[in-house]
Amino acid sequence: MRATDLQSWAEAAPKLVAVAAGRAPADLVIRGGKVVNVHSREVLDGWQVAVAAGRIAAVAEDLSHCIGEATEVIEAPGQYVIPGLCDAHMHIESGMLTPAEFARAVTPHGTTTMFTDPHEIANVMGLEGVRLMHDEALLQPVNIFTQMPSCAPSAPGLETTGYEIGPEDVAEAMTWPGIVGLGEMMNYPGVAAGDAKMLAEIAATQAAGKTVGGHYASPDLGPAFLAYVAGGPADDHEGTREADAIMRVRQGMRAMLRLGSAWYDVKAQITAVTEKGLDPRNFILCTDDCHSGTLVNDGHMNRVVRHAVECGCDPLVALQMATINTATHFGLERELGSIAPGRRADMILTSDLATLPIGRVIARGETVAVDGRVTVDFPHGDWPAHARDSVNMGADKRADDFVVTAPEGANRVKAKVIGVVENQAPTRALTAELEVRDGAVEGDAGRDVCQIALVERHRATGGVVNGFVSGFGYQGEMAVASTVAHDSHHMIVVGTSRADMAKAANRLAEVGGGVTVWRDGQELALVELPIAGLMSDAPAEEVAAKAQKMVEAMGACGCTLNNAYMQHSLLALVVIPELRISDLGLVDVTTFQTTDVFEAET
Image (cartoon, rainbow, N blue to C red; front, top):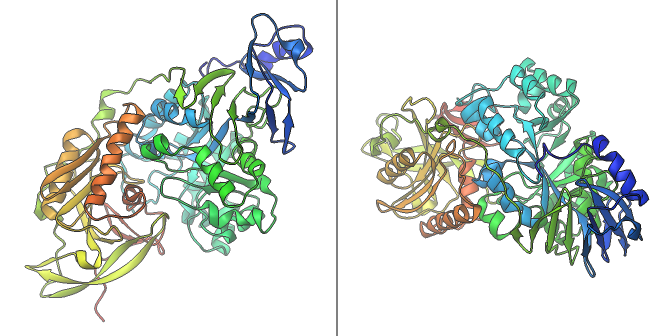
């Protein structure tokens, strides 16, 4: 049943009432299990659930009066019946998959609702790309709600995107059927400064009665944070400390605690509930970014709930944070997020609330996955040809394009270096003394300093910005290139060999985008992402297998970071401190200004 086929509560009400009263048979009854009620935070042993028209008609101890000859009955002895899991904040593009393939990958893990912000494709294709994601989302048998991206570019004046988003685009999108709010407002300095364009986007969202997503990536919880909250964002997922979560809920926001492929921010913040005793209703679990390997091998929101429990959270509270809290936040408490009359019949059968193995997944009253295998189709949308022709970097690159030219006469320089922080989005602003050879500044693999370059790929300007990065541990002659480069999505190339960096860049131009790893002049791994240079419409298992080879190839080049690809893809994210790279130069995100690669001589 597609989203567009599901009857509204009002349309389904006559049948729901008739089934609950016993005047008409249910389509489905689940009995013999233990129903988890996230409204009352209790387990109702032996209670039953009746479903009709894709919605829950009744929940009670005995629903035998709802069973007719055609009613499907699922016997669930020893099983918990829990609401389908909701991901409150995520980017489908981070999974390297289209909405259909992403949904097919996560449904067996119990995710039946996603709130997605397609700002990655917005930076490449503008409003058209958002609409393409939105339309494919509505075809799926599970719920994918779209948040209209707010910031393309994410930081005006610090990067150049393929397209820009403005208040008029936001106002238009608010009329689309699957739009549930405004995507994360990443330009937090703009909001805090009263930027008219950012406030106009927020106003258009609020005028439509929809939710404004937040993104406050600074550790400063003083006046700048207060000004940001006053601007209207209703949630935030960028917290990394207990103090961040506490301050957000004290200001009337929802604290979204994320566990993605590389972001491990739940443990540090959930103590606000488990130790400080704050009301858990305003805490929500999410993933933000998960690549295909995580989705196929480790899970999705079930993985986040398990992790929260491992961090000391009561399983029932953790489930609330992944179901009803999320639905309530987006104004959909009467539509989803719980097992209660009228709600979409999105449910999971599991044998244990702490470890959360997923047995059966039901969405809108239909079984969509059993024991890790999907049982329904996930339809693809129509992607135009130009969506597969988005890598426009001009002429092929040469090794000389990746030379960092030293100041005239210098034998050594003090260079600014982007410092990668494992399992976190922020970077550190480091410095390193580097040698100069024939006028070119050299990296220093012995001290874990290699080169980074951003290759412009939207307008074929031929531009290349060069700098240095530390933290990957790369050794030997190698390079890694990716057209996934949040959020402007130019091409990021990291390497120790300028020749391999050129080969890697040219390879991605040849295949239309993706990720490639090179060593000693040979390609070790390639993940093709032909749609906008961000996604593949191949099955998740195929993409995950290629992504695993990519991870192994990065390891063969000396990298030991957890999910180093995710760290690589964020090196151009100029809204998260401290130091990043863009097509306009090196960016100091503590001051929101471009900065020189070299320290000034004193």
